[in-house]
Image (cartoon, rainbow, N blue to C red; front, side, top):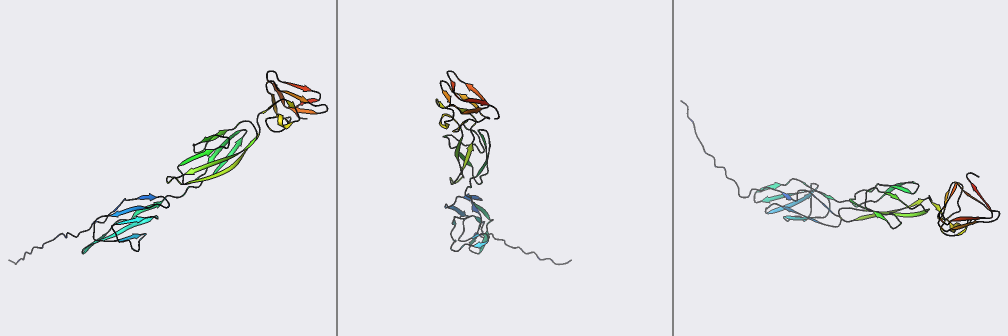
Length: 238
């Protein structure tokens, strides 16, 4: 028969073997803040961001202040290993914006802001809301309201935007006793016209001067209210 030779091979595991990891595995940072990345144990370290060596980054921990994909090359004696890339994102600043639609004295707001997670509305009349896209019912008096939306992100950074919202008068009524042609008598800040439903409030007396023609769609009288007319009151289209 033939001859055979047997040999044994010793396989040794080096105590310098490296398993390269980075923690945390992924995260985000706020502008002007930092995040510590920590590598697993080794002797020497070289950190990379987006596959480019970071000058001077040769410690086990690296202080990140910008977004990117970070990894580390770890050497331990004759052994080395490179970690998987760790994505770090920067939280973007919020941008506040909105549109709106007016129907009578009801305003529907549509929030078009970006990069926010909290919203604060100031409707310009002393009221507020924190809904994403609220619907606001204003009083019936004509006015222009400065509406402010503040959008805040997870880093507590915020953005403000303000827009004027014009509300036409929808409730024409007296504010006091006086002459019909006196604008200060009326809630809408103008004299009633033929499209207005006019309410003479309780105990108010309105005088129509001689030769003057007052106009309204209709007139509602509350208790004790009245018109003192030396002129003319016309209803409907002139």
